Image 1 (spheres, rainbow over the protein chains, first blue to last red):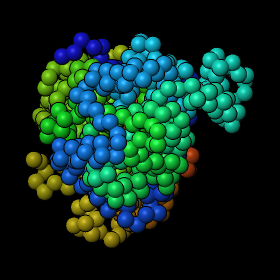
Image 2: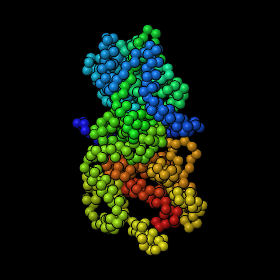
Image 3: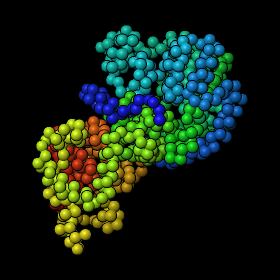
Image 4: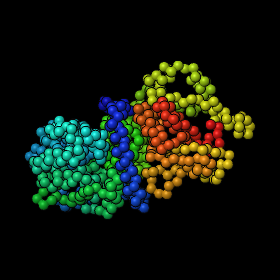
Length: 466
Length: 141
């Protein structure tokens, strides 16, 4: 059991909802609209469900032959002139990156969006060692200026309104706090970022896919920021999780058709760039990172989560995520995929996450690589219960519910005694906020005059009793 | 629903009449667990067994809603352990039904009905909640 403080998503989500009447409804509406675009894009492809199946199979095959494909990738990338490094965990990843930067005398670096670098907490590590790290993705830069982690794996600052961004830029860049025109704000950021690209001694990217047969990795963005970062400075470092492998270039024909459609309801990202070896006169380092992935691969119930291509569709479709905001999960990965990934890093710290779900199942159905997310959330609940991580209130509530539903006679007795008792119970007890969370925003149901069972016995039962 | 639709293949409910505008709420477990209707995320021919049974009831009009299969937020113990999110999901659901002129919300799931009804009553919104079986059976209401 870790000593870390437990993430409390329910309490944090409540703050997000109660904060004002603007943020949560906007967040919900934007992501719902994204889902609708995704549905329309998917519907326009007759073989959509076959593509999902194919993508799932390719990932399953690759993950079950991962050692082979990783070595093939390393050999081919090396042949093309890249330096390939292996990092067992976050600490090793950060140390490798730092040593490359240090040996090149880099004092400032420009990076594009990478959830893996986020997972490794790379930026604070480098900044503590005197290296200035600048995010170049607009959403990530907004989050960096606000000293917050990304709240969504594709739309990092989606929980913010444009007024929030105008206020933030006013504080950090000195612009007019009342000018929240998106074009103006984007232009401000563009002008602010350009000198940073020129000053940077190194560019860092992640990698969406790594192709074993060519040693190529792909970076998909809409802003082209990764491409400038990888092209202006002569040193390019890419951090890639070992689960990003695909065997062949032609597999990209499957994944690229799924990725942007699932992520944002667009046919493709604006830039889908292939990096094969360093550019002329440049130097390319690829850091392949495990950080718990091979351990996850050995977990029979959870290894399928490694198929994830980080599209965020499960977050957009999740009714709980849309109302909670990503920061409320208190973890690198939020939403349904976060609920099943985060506990593999720290079971105790993230033990509440699997309960922040209604198990509606939409995430499993939307997932372009067919990860059984909803089933895994349920299985994580069992793990948390078995390990004794549940707070007392949940333990008692689950035990009571289990007992009542498992003993029909007692359930019926409760109906008979409980229903009339409701008529006499005073409201201050029934609607006491801490005794009865049901009653905070809901009236209690009025008990039916006759239960269905009583009606059935009186009207339909052949024997008139059990 | 499956028994009536797939096994008995009931094609009329002569004893039932329901002259009201109805919002249909198939629960998540019946859609994505039991396959009673096509989930919006899955591509393919749409089908909805509950709607097809209800459409055979004289007078009944099913009103289209914006988010027919978005979870209403009951979620079992979730409704009390994650009360704020649960209630907000429920309120959004109730407003979706109301906005489209539903008088009744009909569902094959008692828990969704109990949750949504509690939300609607607290917000003093004029919606009535009944089980599909009540409609198909012609009551009791």
